[in-house]
Amino acid sequence: MTQESPQLIPHTPTTTFKNDTTISMSAEDTEDMEGSTESQTPTVHRAAQNLYWCRQVRAFAKEHQRDPTEPSPFSFALDFLAEGAANAVFTVRPWTDDSVGTNFVITAHNGSDVILSGQQFRNKVLRFSKGAPNTPDCKSIIDSYYADIKPLFEDFDEHLLHPELTEIEPLMVNQLNKSIAEHAIVNPRRFKGWIPKIGGNQLALIIDNMSSIPGSALTIEIKPKWLAQSASAIRNALRCRTCAMQSLNVSNGESKTEAYICPLRLASGNAALIKPWVQNKVAATMVAETSSVPSATQANIIDAITSYFSTGEQGNKLLAHLRTLQVKHDPIGIMRREEVSGLPHWTYPPVDTTNESLDRDLRLAMTLRDCSLYVRVHYEGENVVKVESKLGDLDFKSANKMDDWWLKEQQLINGEWYKKIGELQREVPCEIFAGWRDIVQRHWG
Ligand SMILES: O=P(O)(O)O[C@@H]1[C@@H](OP(=O)(O)O)[C@H](OP(=O)(O)O)[C@H](O)[C@H](OP(=O)(O)O)[C@H]1OP(=O)(O)O
Ligand SMILES: Nc1ncnc2c1ncn2[C@@H]1O[C@H](COP(=O)(O)OP(=O)(O)OP(=O)(O)O)[C@@H](O)[C@H]1O
Image 1 (cartoon, rainbow, N blue to C red):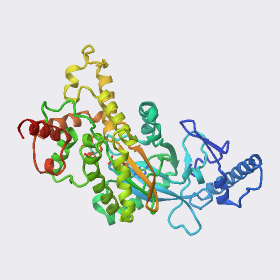
Image 2 (image 1 turned 180 degrees about the vertical axis):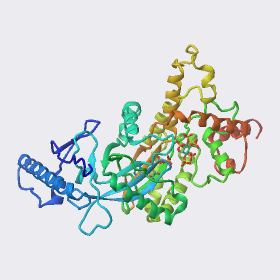
Image 3 (image 1 turned 45 degrees about the vertical axis):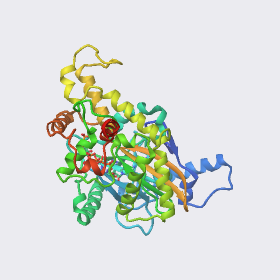
Image 4 (image 1 turned 90 degrees about the vertical axis):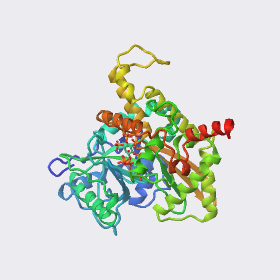
């Protein structure tokens, strides 16, 4: 979509995304641009909208070839939201006359080059890969998401975010990096890197925005991590893989214990054990967002999240499903991978023990451990009206991470992190240690 190679004339006023959902211009879209046509019949209304849409896009395309930064009805502003080690995330909002900064035009990446507009961007974020080593680019993320990950969630489809590929002009990357720089100046410790400039249009993922909505919804973000013990852990371990790693990180000053919960405990469905963590997590979220919710509402939000993760409830079922997938795809563990590769089937149900298949499955299990879960609680006044949760960051882990995983496990075993009892264990007990303690108390206590 550069000046040299204009590609902006759409064939059709609809955009078919990769997962076969078709998004067309909605009534709300055209109302944004001109007066409502509510009195017309739906068919006439839709035809008029489509005609209007085509004319507008063509007119804009002509204009766009002259000056790509001239605002138009199809322009958006992108606001920096957050960044991780691998991706930078921006919220999308329609460009208005009093907007400042740079406007963006965003096209679907599906061969049609249709400019996306209005409704398609309401409550969305754009996620850009920063090209860090061993992290996938947007195209690979989408390919593996639809080929390998989505099919695993047939009964849990409502918990997926269904990302789609989009494009923006390459020139705009400077502006996005400028926003990242502005945040880096204010908060240098959060800075994790730039979006690299590539040859052609810049790809990005368009995803539902799961952020809190001031006055009506609060989102907590968690990582499910290892929902079952690592197959490489020592026998008689007193800690699970995540608690062992957390203890190691705390001892290195790389992690804090506040708002931490043992993933096995979170997945246990035991409301009494989960609630104290939910209280800390909600408080920490409000501090991070510099927001606040009236205390009566806050209490109801805490109860709603606690009950969402309690036995038999939707959050508990989702974690149980994730645990099943993690174990199914990594029954052997990184340390024994070489040892068993190429051997005849020896587990039940049997696993394909070719190196390639083991590696792929392990990468999938690691992806499902390191994803994010956004839990959003919608409220009206004091009352909670809905709890929803969506999995994000399901980026298929690189095959180059194998050595790294081996080294981490080696470090946990050699450093005895699976069995050390220290401060962390008293503050935030691991479910495995709690189980041992119960047995010991029953017999000797
Ligand atoms: O090994 P872990 O459990 O510490 O997980 C790493 C995460 O640490 P944390 O969740 O904070 O404990 C770590 O998260 P942070 O960057 O520390 O937020 C990464 O997600 C890392 O993955 P990658 O190397 O970026 O592909 C994660 O590495 P892998 O999942 O690839 O091992
Ligand atoms: N769909 C979304 N809705 C709301 N916020 C989001 C969304 N996607 C990402 N974010 C925010 O952006 C942050 C970084 O996103 P993301 O986790 O995708 O980046 P990452 O680079 O993959 O992270 P990591 O460092 O864990 O690899 C998240 O922690 C979250 O706060």
